[in-house]
Amino acid sequence: MRDLDRRALDIAGEVIAHVTPADLDRPTPCAAWNLGELLRHLISENRAFADAAGTRARWPVEDTDLTRAYHDSAAAVTEAFAAPDLYDRQIEVGEFGAFPGRIAVGMHFIDFLLHGWDVAASIGVPYRPDPELAGSALAMAARWPDTPKTRGLGAPFGDRVPVPGDAPDFDRLLGLLGRSPSWVTPC
Image 1 (cartoon, one colour):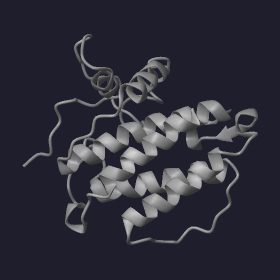
Image 2 (cartoon, one colour):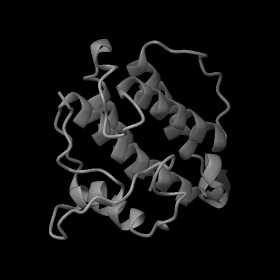
Image 3 (cartoon, helix red, strand yellow):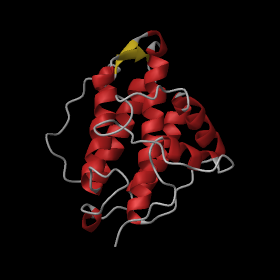
Image 4 (cartoon, helix red, strand yellow):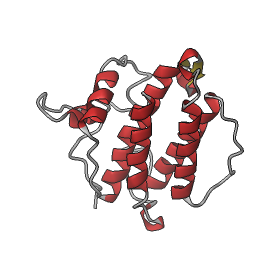
């Protein structure tokens, strides 16, 4: 699970490296957030998971270099998730409650795999995770409960979007988590 998460962070980071300051107001598939807000969410999630897993770092109040802040936060959460006893502990995942470490890492993995695509779609760069990442994320996300807390307004993912059953795993994951694989930035 740690390797999957690290790989998802890496491919999201590769896409984020393409973001320019002029892109920050662009819309994203996360209707409530523009690209700058989405990047700040990713950074704060990395920091929150790192803190919850035991890394108590001093974070800057406001970091204007979002690419650097993303990479710093990704390194911190990767280090925190490497703790040998992580899977034996309960990790507090925001408003969702406490979960075994392995589950918390899985939640983080899926969140970053999906949001990496959100960033890529917003700026129009290719994003196709390898089949192992896509298949693993789809298998895990398919087991998540379908409740108001996990779907709809204010939830981390939106209502399911129909996607053909024979679509690639990543497209099926996008649909399962409320994204249309054909989403493009509105003109």
